[in-house]
Length: 270
Ligand code: HPA
Image (cartoon, rainbow, N blue to C red; front, top):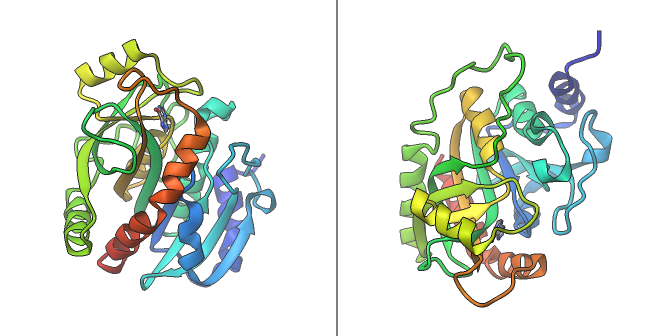
């Protein structure tokens, strides 16, 4: 029988890690620089992990960095998989499942997103309070995994306690942190202005092509979730501006310092 790819990857990684991880970090487009702050880092390229395809999106590295950050043992995935790359949702959530198998108890997930809420301009950090899954995909489709729930409750998918910690760190550090609903679309084309009007009417504040699969898998496995979106651009139709990926990466880099202070401040309090 073929080995379960999640367990195969976890077995491969376990002897390489300094300690079992407390927290798994998934770092979105242009936000991977946080791994440079990890102490006693062990780096493993995805190419060396069984069942981890290579990463194709510019701005995503494709490696795992394990070590200490703000006193916590973290497993940071610098570069993620997206369904729009043609990966099965099960591949997209493999990093989270592997981290759960290795003992992580919380997921901190980050992403670049377009601002559907007209008051959320480029550079805004948004604490994700809830999501709209508009991708038509769910990573739990298929046989139930023994360590996961079949029908996980998502009514508090983004942990209220972790959100309170993030708000208090942002206050203390003088970092503006808005709150809102993340609408996930499949991509890879950006939205039309009509789609953004739809998302606004549905209650979406930010729109992106990631995050939701990882959050669903984390909740199914019992991990607490904190989600932070960096608004890199106004969503389609809000300004005259045309959208492009380089703008997303530039905005992410410009926010790297604030973003890093927020995430490390939160980790220190977990
Ligand atoms: N739409 C979807 N995904 C995104 C955007 C956007 O405007 N910006 C960054 N990721």
